[in-house]
Amino acid sequence: MLPATLALIDDDATFSEYLAAYLQERGVAVQWFADSDDLLCSERPFAFDFYVVDLMLPGIDGVSLLRLLRRRTQAGMLVVSGKLAADVFDQVMVAGADMHLAKPVTFEQVALAVEAVYRRSGPSGAQQPTQQLAWRLDESARRLLAPDGAVIDLSPADAGVLACLLEAHGETVARDTLARRLGLSLADDPNLLHATIYRLRRRIERATPGLVPLQSKSRVGYVFRAPLQRA
Image (cartoon, rainbow, N blue to C red; front, top):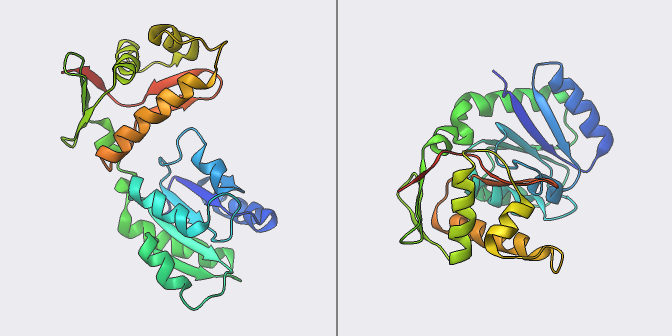
């Protein structure tokens, strides 16, 4: 029993290419990231069914990446690394990994480890059911109510962004549309909208451990990838 989707985060291009091909032959849709920051900046970094992580990475290091991923998903996580240190195993397990394999390792061993972890964690690891529950926006009180009961206080700009996304009914809202709604000029400062979205995401992340459904769509705009209703 192998996961349907898997993120492979490893800067060894040759190893990653052949491991990805090996897993793809077994029906796994593999997406390779040579840099941990590339994963985190991708459209849905926390939506994979499984993660295979190296420890010596460009961007944030592997242990920090594990810790961040575990805050956002219950998906299976396997460390495959050649890093040699007495406390490596302890570090990765405390950070949230499910299993550790030391390189050199065969592709068959990696596949067996992925299968063993995934069999225990199951297809619910990515917390999809929670994401599909409705979020509720109370515009008058400027509050966002998460499916787990968390209450997020909003700034006027936050409430404006969410009201615009609510009216889009799950469709992507263009950056220009959001900027006009907030009275921002992208021509004067194209980073103002990005900063507003970033602050809103951080408010949500601090309030609830669930997946944050506010996602960017590269060069287009933003979308709320979960049901959003008025309270």
